[in-house]
Image (cartoon, rainbow, N blue to C red; front, top):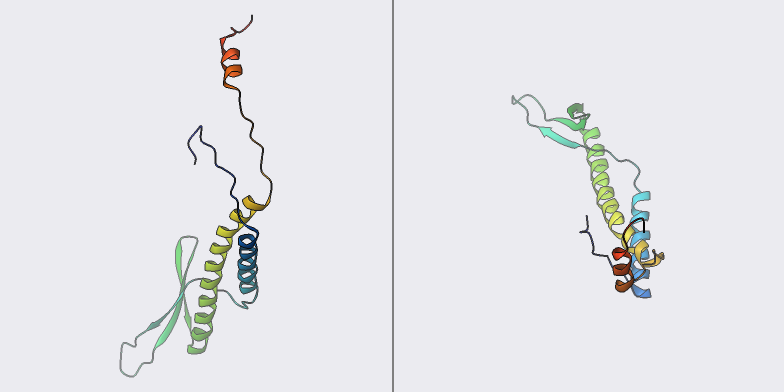
Length: 132
């Protein structure tokens, strides 16, 4: 939140900088669109408790503030790991897109015009009593 009485100046960019912003945005957008499966959570390999047992895999995630765990086969674990990695890349790309968007929009789209108040006129208006 900005303090009262201070204004934020218009952000100016060169045409080349705006082209770079647009190119970065398009590249991130393409990266987001290419991902086939997206899964949140993590895959864990659980060590066997006895020498005769094999490694088991679990997928854990949060659902409505509760941790949910699902047992996975080794094949499912590999697929889920790729989907989780893709989801993390998408989240990082979305964060970057969210950072670039307002910067580009503030630079490209005309904003509100500010008016300069005449200090003498403002002081004269305050000296007139109400109801006079």
